[in-house]
Length: 600
Image 1 (cartoon, rainbow, N blue to C red):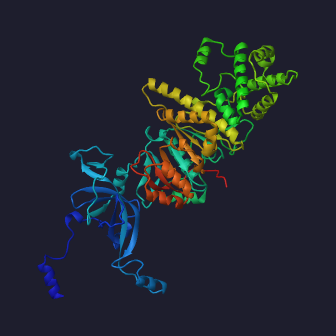
Image 2 (cartoon, one colour; image 1 turned 90 degrees about the horizontal axis):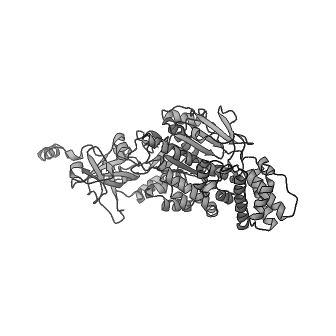
């Protein structure tokens, strides 16, 4: 030993890491035939194995003086030193119950995000650090280059995770919050919340509603199950309370919430302090959208539109609309592909259909429900005689049956039952449209069609008024629960006019601070046209391999390692991808602070 110590001393003393390696966790390894382009293997000693969890950001200072940023996409794995993990000796020891743990090391696979350049070296990049610019990598780090883990603060900066809206915490991290800013280039670009039942979509959405409300967004929720009607109260769920405590959060209700439900129906939360019944307004619905939602055949469509045209003439003849010059100008600008005819009610159209059906069947004139039409029936009959009305009483009775069916629900044109859209789009107001008692996708689609169009028109007005004052309008988010019921592939093939309305709202909304949130447990039913409208994603567990494969084709920017984890995500976990983030992250979603009325 004395001789050995003398040799060490003669050789310059104990081995010391070069200064450029100090503080590093591991070293890059040589490439092998199985290596993947864009990734490198990093080896690290046993005692540092826990310091480099999955999704950690690292800086690789290549021995050729280049600096790279990367993210751990696989690992850390433990491997024995000098042995194969499946060597006969280790297998034999394990199956015979003997205790033998050889020395081992760690291995992680790192995906290269980009190469860091000094600002003065000057090249436009995608990610800006304090004094570095990150550009796409042009080379690979060389073997035996030191690898350093980035701090939580630097990770947040590099991945652009700062913002007012907190979504959760990056998985495998305790000090990296996943946040997105309340900016125009993020939220109005629309969000998709996808995942199987029980994956945590409602928790995610309610938590984001609470934070959007606190940043003075106007929020509208089209709630088909009534789950969100109690978010004005703090959660009392024991599991949620424990989770909130672990995250340093507190239970709290969402202030300024208001519940709306259809006339003749019930709300799921009758104890809510702010409840209001509303009715649909037929004049706000495009006749072509009504045709699609009622699923009229070609012959029935022809008769419905003929009755609609006669009703328009009757309104004019009876001096109901238009009357003033302003109303006549409004009529010239009317686009029936987007909205209905002013002051026309469903009862007006139904009265005309009844008169035509009675005429075709040579029956006595029926009593008309609307007083103005009943009084002017002779003028309406004259319009029918002049209108070259299609024959075939059977088709007319079929149209009358379908229109009469929704009319008997008494959800249209109730006096004082219209919604105040300007009030709904005030800062910090949360409007919950409770559709839990309708039990009819057809009625829900009528409600959603009217609300989307009317809210978009109101936001257009708000935008124009704000522009005159050189201000920003109130940012607005509209969440659509069970979006597959409204916009399934089958439905939009049958309802092209309705889908085009939604597409126009989505495109215009991006410029008007109006965002849409599509929530569904059946993403396989959403067509590519709808997926193409969405730029931000919160993906909870999706088990179906075919659905995952289809989503991979529609959603860019998510790496293979994250797609591989999608089918095994636990409740409350999600893959989060927003346009403000440098790359998607697997995230532990924050528990909701408010009460949900979940459906079993």
